[in-house]
Length: 70
Image (cartoon, rainbow, N blue to C red; front, top):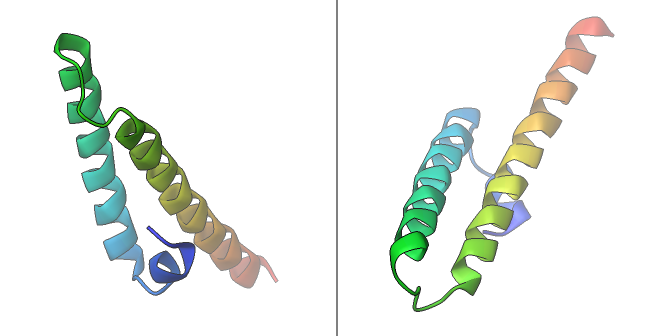
């Protein structure tokens, strides 16, 4: 997922995307423990998507804190 597209989402949508991506990551890890994944690089991609989403979520939190403190 592109950072620019993530920034267009609302806070609630970002939180939902994080939840969905974490679920997908869990399923991939679980399946990978029992059988060979067709595309093992998908784990890396999903993990990075989660990181991107969480980074943008944190940026918004810090920006909000800066507005309330400043």
